[in-house]
View 1 (cartoon, rainbow, N blue to C red):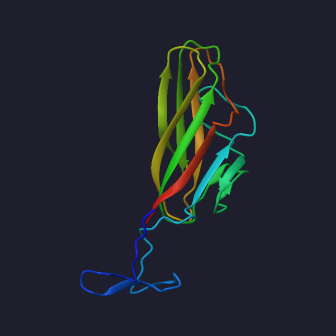
View 2: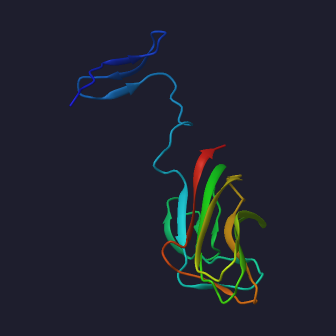
Length: 182
């Protein structure tokens, strides 16, 4: 094991930036800015389904993520299935959906994050066989920190007009976190 023994940390111009006394107490000098630090309370959430959900044929359907697995700021609404961040910045959202294949030979499935009523595609996939499939994707979106809200949506179309069922498996979820404040 190695030790770094130091009493003062100085800038090249000779000003002391940090002092450590013999008891291990640290004193910072000058202006400390926190804009480049990641804190333990970076806004983040993760939610999942409480049971299977049917996605009606050729209809945008809000995914009912009603089980909050994590929401360290309390900004996720489990009854509206909506995240309304109260800190301005860029957020990375991830959407993971496991859909049954239905009885169709071909399908199109779209996952989207809805920002204030506008659908922003996370993925758009054509499937040539009626197979079960896990689809996922991420999207980086800006929030104003007051009124912008985000919701997860799914759209499905099958060649025989059958509905698609989202599984309530634990890997069916959506999440988001602040990447950088603005």
